[in-house]
Length: 249
Ligand SMILES: C[S@@+](CC[C@H](N)C(=O)[O-])C[C@H]1O[C@@H](n2cnc3c(N)ncnc32)[C@H](O)[C@@H]1O
Image 1: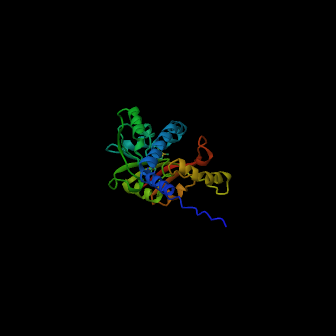
Image 2: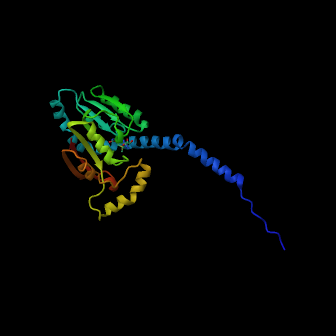
Image 3: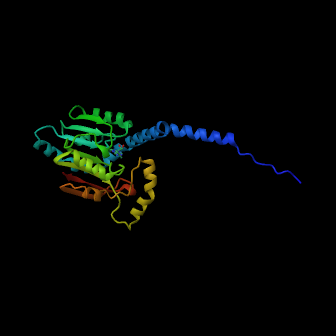
């Protein structure tokens, strides 16, 4: 009778794998998270110019009211830009506006600073790191809050809209321009949005393609909401349906 060989458990190899996984887990914030956020800022900066050029007419129309609005204000117009990224909207604001750019990802700082330099000195800009779900400002601080291509990425849209309303002065306006879910949930475009959504979230910092943002804005308790729905043709089909408009406190 032959003796059966007993397979010993490869304890050293297993321990080695666990130690390596432990090290990766310990440094995940520093290595993975930081590199990812750096990549996101770099990638968005690369595409911002194209997006800005493509949306130029829409933004000109959307921000036009600011110029009249400013004339009616006694003091300088104060604008909070939520999720400002590379700060691509500054050129649409009237001269002598005070802008606060709120952005959680610090890797955008250098790109945004470059943009501020291009604008010259006519607009004063402060940068603050923070999240739209917990705006670090007193109640009724701003005349205008601007959200462009941000509500698709925030973790809690309801909380963000409450916060936006809180920091707006009475009669102040939230200006928004967002890509949203297709209206027709039987369309092929909606199906594509659903398929691409997980991949888009993974590579674009949580950006969802299937958010019914308009419904959230309508339910946020603004006194008046003006929304325009339009397909932004230069965008790929999964982020093509867009909304823009004003929500007044
Ligand atoms: C697609 S970029 C848009 C940037 C800029 N608003 C624009 O129009 O180009 C989305 C931005 O939202 C920011 N963001 C994501 N989650 C956020 C949150 N919870 N609060 C504030 N900003 C957020 C991201 O860091 C990023 O800068």
